[in-house]
Length: 446
Image (tube, rainbow, N blue to C red):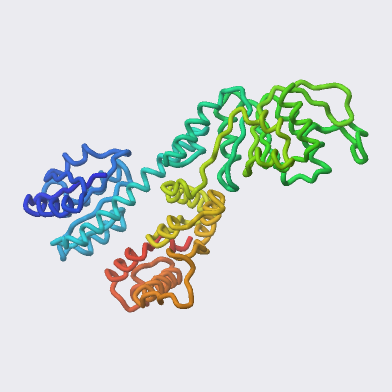
């Protein structure tokens, strides 16, 4: 990530560059705004920090051209005290933030760091959307951890292989998602993807669900029914919780896997099948076989290729990325604005054990999108009666944010009226809104 510094005063430019470089930022410092524009583009990984008053091209003209190149490049304006009103107007027109001259080093570093984090999220979301548009394993299986990179490579390698696959992973690790990726990434994607949860089907109907039946095969069988196996011909049958399949059906499934034929219940003729079976389990099938609870011969027939799915606690570097993806999707479904992610929430996400894995994370994102909070324990565990009380400043900060939100809502997002009712200046209100991550557009009446 890069910081592009622009100022026509070489001394000011050099001072700001040294400040940022001492904090570890990569800095490009230029005095010519036109030259700076040539470096920008939709994939440019950085932020622009520019003076407002410059000869030839001022900060406003530069802001307009940067937004034309990529509206989501953060532009931070540096302005003298007398230009504050002008800078605030620029913020309303799309600037990320503004800093008063002379720039206080700590504040400059803080603003730049937030701007770079914002740009990183923008680029990551674009990458995710591009992957999702492509489909297959690249788009469905999200993450950058070594475990997920290995999983993606395995799925892409197996997608066109004509072998049955056994997926092994804890509840909520995404077994059906991986099964769909196997289906859509291979030549069978033109056929049906048929999913059956063996643990959710009563013993009395699971055989009919799998094999289908002829009219009169049993009481209530009034018409022919095509079973899941036959419906999946040419495509993929996904059998989740295979360990829950009754023993007598395991014998029939073994025959299907070996001979690729079925007989509907009540029928006398066999029907050839061309399909791939992907089974999934959360338990050790070999141990179940040793205990007499699963057929050993079926285990070895399914175990041609076993793909382990990593639990979320073993890929913690993917938590924030997955959460942002789920939060964005949840906000679209609920027609809500994506809420800002504060450091405390990210810390809770990183520290949580995720016993429910990715499914639990998706549920948390749904709650946050609806404004219900994440429901996770504070970092370090649940707050006990003897735990330290939250600092007064933090409590007041939260109350202040709520009061400003209520006032903006009552005033329909009109900043001037809101500031007047709260008894503060417009500038003070803008600063507090920026501090709390509030956007007036979210309160404008339709």
